[in-house]
Amino acid sequence: MSIAAIGVPGRSFVRPSALPGFGITFGFAITYLSLIVLIPLAALVWRASGLGFGGIWRVATDPRVVAALDTSFGTSALAALTNAFFGAIVAWVLTRYRFPGRRLLDATVDLPFALPTAVAGIALATLYAPTGWIGALFARWDIKLAYTPTGIFIALVFIGLPFVVRTVQPVLQDLDREIEEASATLGASRWQTVTRVVLPPLVPAILTGVGLAFARAVGEYGSVIFIAGNMPFRSEIAPLLIVTRLEDFDYAGASAIAVIMLAISFVILLAINLLQAFLQRRLGHA
Amino acid sequence: MLALLGPSGSGKTTLLRLVAGLEAPTAGRLLFDDEDATHLSVGERRVGFVFQSYALFRHQSVAENIAYGLRVRPRRTRPSNAEIKRRVAELLDLVQLNGLDRRRPSELSGGQRQRVALARALAVEPRVLLLDEPFGALDAQVRRDLRRWLRELHDRTGHTTLFVTHDQDEALELADRVAILHRGRLEQIGTPDDILDRPATSFVAGFVGEAVRIPAEVREGVLRIGAQYVPAPAGQRAGNFDLFVRPSDVVVTDGSDEALSAKVVGVRRTGPARRAELSLGEGLPTVEIQLPARHALRKGESLQVRLATVRLFASGTRAGR
Image (cartoon, rainbow over all chains, first blue to last red):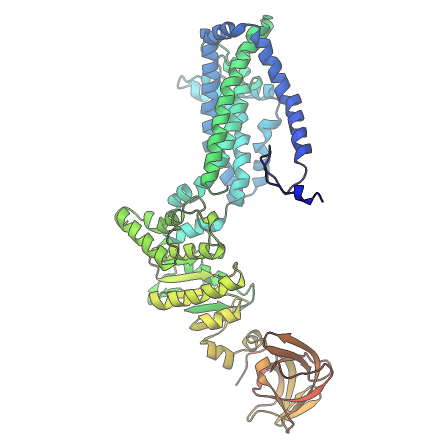
């Protein structure tokens, strides 16, 4: 009989699971990821490798490139963190209170997803320009919003908002209301309840949202270029620099900047994911 | 120790939440001893509330959960760290969870979580301990153990305790007094003996003790049940009544003028006893009786029974006894 062969413990590539279908789903996932993500990225790296390591290093240390990368990653991080705060508040309002127009407001959150980014860019530029509705208010105090790094920040906050709201919302919805009541019966103030009981379980979701908003912001092009002013060394983002290089037929230079961006983004996103996994474990989700 | 007992939707939990200050009353006052607590906030009432779902803080360890109520106190009244540590150790000891202080709630069994919730509530030295279906989510064995343990704990600490349950055995066994609620109204409050032996309303009579309700009529000192007649209890006024019959009320007899003839319509063996369903007449609800296992009854057999207690309530209204 061959029964003895079943269930023999042994070292294997994958831990045995009661769910069938690992082979086919894993194969599909790898093929799909390869076609959609890995192969195009490999082509990009291959393209840039034409410059050699020294060539890429030269691009990476070019002051204009450094300034653009700094603008891109710095502003994206700032925008993502801003969204973490305000996105969490929006999610709170949408899940915790019932008010007329809630559904409408809820749908509005997704609009930055749906709008062509160029349209968003033009709309924001018009609004925040020194002659625009909001820009004019600030122009009185001699503050310029559009056509400065602040403009980039505004555009990136706009496109990143849905990520945080949509990741926090379901977690907040599932959060047991009774833990807040328990906290209150134990004598905690509302503020203590929110910071000690409600917020900690939300942190992993907020982090996920921040990671997504950050990634999206780093890669954002359309909305930013209309409002940024695109001045080298001041308000020029890395994706724009890539496009500029492409227009000069400097394909290797363009892909070199892209590879540098990719590497930085990957490290940051990996760090966020690890931190999030660590927090999840600490929260006892296992 | 007071039990709030009633069917689901009777307002037990709402009443408990009102006491805790988690709901606001539309009318009436709430007194703790002689102090008016109606307008005190949840935090000011100093109640210990144990939720049905326990509502433990998942991101905190057992010890942090228990210490929470002490840690959130304003600095002036907050005990020192060493004092908090001592209190937590004491409470862990009390709820018999020593050594589990570093675990997370997700690493505990249902019964252990329940005790953590209890310890957390006791940490703030509450004036009243409020328990919402304390044994609802536990399996039968754990339930029995915890029930006994909770009674002992209560006897030891002497906290005024209010607990909600829909399990009458639990309420009658555990509580000193039981309040029966029905559709948001208090039907009766009293000791388990009062509730069982002297039900105040027809609802209580029907709710406790597996009673069966049979329509009955009293005319000139004679009680009619279906097509059978027996002498009515002395002094019983005439009218239409609901007769509540519990298994323990029915006694097998060998015929007297008080006897009713009954037909066995079903027999079941439950543990050491035998349960038989008896019909007292066509179209009447069947009455259950409990007999020692050696009584071998057969379906279809006839026998004579007597009602040891006759509980009559005017149909659907409060009874005049």
